[in-house]
Image 1 (tube, helix red, strand yellow):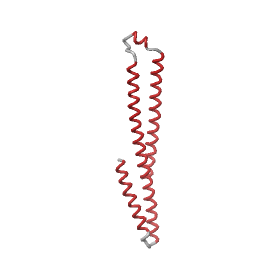
Image 2: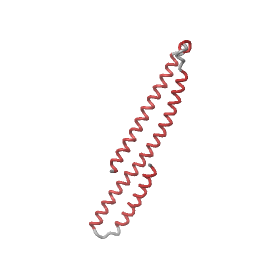
Image 3: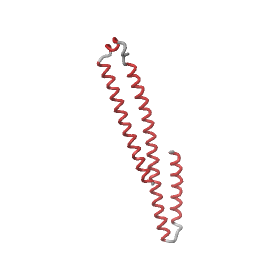
Image 4: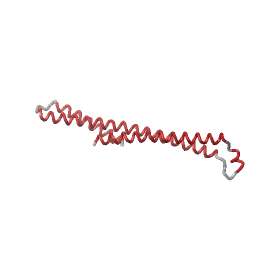
Length: 137
């Protein structure tokens, strides 16, 4: 998708440059004003497309970071789960102390906070992207 936007942006930038060079060749003032208006509109569209590409790249970067963090959280949770005692083994349950409970609680809180933070970042990027798409229309 990003490569599609890059190609579209390149095409529109080329068209904009052609429009600008054509403007100097036009003698009729009413046609010049119309073309100037079209150039302004095309320049605004190019700026929005450039912003969209930046937002897409930012979103890809955030999603890659989210995937990495998700994998780390999954590993951390699996590690915490492996340390839980077998509930059918009373001796293991008794040996599981408050330090173990505190450590488990810390892991759970850290992973929850990390997930909330990353989700908020991804949602903000999605909202920025949607706003840029609305301006493009």
